[in-house]
Length: 410
Image (cartoon, rainbow, N blue to C red):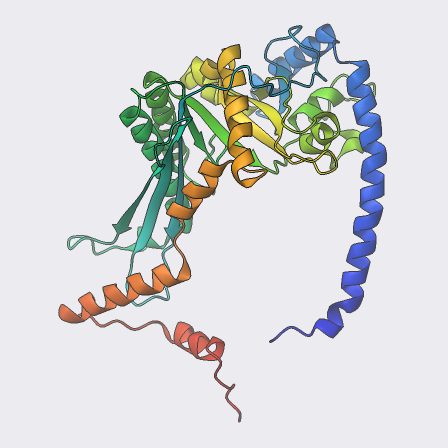
């Protein structure tokens, strides 16, 4: 044990005091935000005017000013903004196919004795309403320099591996959707990932554009296969609806179009945690952001929309998730309600989180024991071909220190 916990005792106490104070402040500001939402739940003209200002002054502006994003009601006047839409079972299909895919990776390590990385996609095909056992699958892919590749620098890029993993998840979900397109009832394709995909890290613009096009190609394949595509985000941190509310608040300023003013720090999940009863959802919103504008330009049907859903079964402990939908799903009211009902049904199996997402993660995750076994097998094969396998000096000394050995004494 290397941490001196005694030195941290005072800091831990101060941390708890600050958290308690922040909680009290948050509750007071939430009271105000909820009241403002109720009082403006049908202020359609005001919200539309605010949206048009953002389009003209931010999203279409040539200076590309930073903008964290907001929202707009997808179907104004169909329901008030504070509507609570229940899962009443009317649209829960008797039979449906629910597919989920997740991904995991072993990132390249420059201290390792050999150069490689691994991406594993795993998932489940769940037959809702039937006695058929779920079908699970796992597909590992080992990547390494080929015999003609003397430059192996690209194999030391964790960011690139993460992007490849994300793309592999979408590709596999699209493939599984296509393979199961003739099943009984609706076909729900759900991933534990936002649909409005933006590659992480500092990468070349042309490469980013290529990645997004490939992502959208996967979305299109799911659409063409008749799938209802969903991105599920547990404990979302976005404040899109809060920004939308603040844009009609008297304190809003055009100089800071995405500012929350004194509501800063309050998320949409905080807001809808006050509104949504167990199993209920919000209305559907469209995402308003630079990223979604690019998505729409590449394919109008792929504009990303979303709703918030309380997956908890307890009145006193809401669990708010954000459910992403492409426009071609979000415009279909029956499809949205079917998705709502199926997700709530999935959450009843294990509680608060969809069963298929849990199983997909289980099939995809590469644990420490898996990695150790893989590297043992690689090492044995390297020996057969006369390839020396030794970690860097730095890694070897760390392994000794972390393996319970006594430190060296002078």
